Length: 304
Length: 247
Image (tube, each protein chain N blue to C red):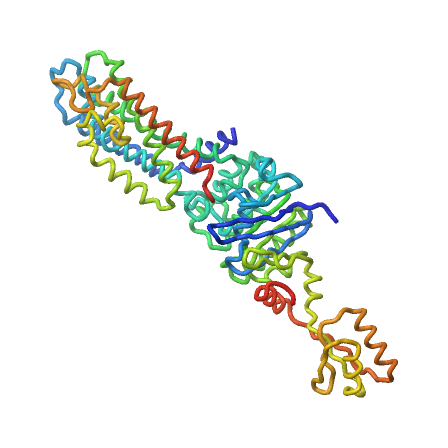
């Protein structure tokens, strides 16, 4: 297991009687892009605000870079760049001046301003007051601000919210380049799986404040299996045999429809059928799209 | 201290707007006008008389209102579109931010107060006053008037941090500033009324013709003790509130 950059243990945030976040165990390894998914109001922003020390957890602990957030908040925040909800800026100031207000606090060299403007391709518009910027440009300025302090961890809350397809593409490419080119670990939240599946290696899915899935995208894809279909020479007899082995199946379009079973079980079943002189024409897997799985997870709170 | 000086430096950049300078000029300009229109011929202490005339509106209305406006402006940028979040995710403590913001407010008030002092000298020079300046009265008014704004500035800063609206704290401030003219008549309540404290500290009450009235007759020292007490209460209230605030 590689080193964990973020680790929360039994994190809870309660407002009145309602849990906004409950028993949350977040684990994010160094150098990865972690997609934090969930519908609006599931607790993503609340979690992120806790990770950044903007609100206090009701219960539970947060470790970032292996340090306790409560005890070493300043040391941690120095190495974290973030963009929470929407980008904030001072409209009357230019991009350079906006970055300068943050630079004075972070105490990084002035040349860093030009560097981050270059990373987000805003150099050309850097001397204009920000109030004339498009949403996409403001978003990029927000990311530039987050990058200013040479962070090791970047936390982006819905960075593509409200952007057009081109803007979404730009931001996505930008985020994708972070671990490779700058060695930055990224936590990116979204309510759309399609937005993060192309960049994230790991996803965490949160629903009504609780984590219902946390694993790699490829493992999520494995969950995409919705069962198997067997086409054999004598389906009726084969079905008897399959049921005799304890599996649930039924006839469908001249084939056998089976539920979700593991790879070794598939192999065993096929062997049994062959041993009983069935000719097997096809073994097909019914696949669902990731979006279907995501919807299932969100609606039912996990895999059934 | 929690990045206090760094935040201060960042705040100064955010405040670099021309209309803030214009705001600071309003009160001194009105004071100059009323000073020029006044007749101080034959006054025994011409400088003090001129100061009193010119600082009347300034201390009664403008200083309390400016305390509210400056406090609201310094929070406005942060209330706009998640600025508090962006500021507080930086390696700064809440305490550092609160102290820096308060410092900017009171420095802007100090500049306004110095501009008023300058205006008095300007008018005195135009009018050709030859008498020596009564420095003790003069300094006490200018400095005391500023110190008396400190509790109000802390109160307004706390309210401005609480309410994300820009107008609401200002409306509150103006509502409580208007009754000043009545409140100063009461020697019982006047000194405890944060909006009246600048006027009470600025006007040299016992120097008025026939002595002062109401709360204006109170000794300067006891007024300052009240001011200090209310400053501590409001400042700590705002500080604790900001430390606990959910952003």
